[in-house]
Length: 278
Image 1 (cartoon, one colour):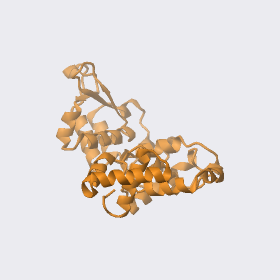
Image 2 (tube, rainbow, N blue to C red):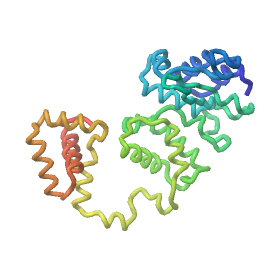
Image 3 (spheres, rainbow, N blue to C red):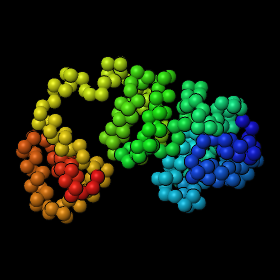
Image 4 (spheres, rainbow, N blue to C red):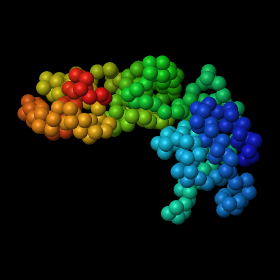
């Protein structure tokens, strides 16, 4: 693609982006150096600190990171790297300028194929709320999974099974919000044969779990993992430190589990009874 203001602006307007990401792309375009060495920048690059970008966008640094990820995985292929020096800004460049013009490389409508050139990056943009997805939003991701998996290792798996495993994968790592590109990467790295795509665990795995361990897992399941220390403090204020420790010790004796597992079980029971919110 030609490296000009007009060419990049046309690519921005033709790329399927959220409103905030569209604004951020335009802001970066406004700072691009069109002559080699202008403001000390390479041709086609723009320099910003993340604090400056967040302030101009009036968003948090965390949200800014999500927007940058959206631009990086979109047809704009935004590239960034840190300049030299302790206080050096980040250098940004639209990677789409390094690619030849191809009409089908840009997702301009909602009904375009989600796996153009075996890529999917054009539609797997935005962010995914791991535990707070609305039914209609989840339905959208399930539809995308169903279309994209045909050319991926997970093609034999059920779309709902892929979606549930993806959410569980990130939930175990304490993530509440992840870039949508993570879902595509998860599908591309899918491992196992068709026999391993069952909704439930294999018979030998199920048989190896004792009834006590299964009950402990059920008690732990509702427990909030994110900011669990804050939930621990809230629960101690609500029921008292002594009573909290007593419940933890009781579960440790009952199930022979670790302090961490007992605490999660106590938190899960509190969530189930409405004492604390997840």
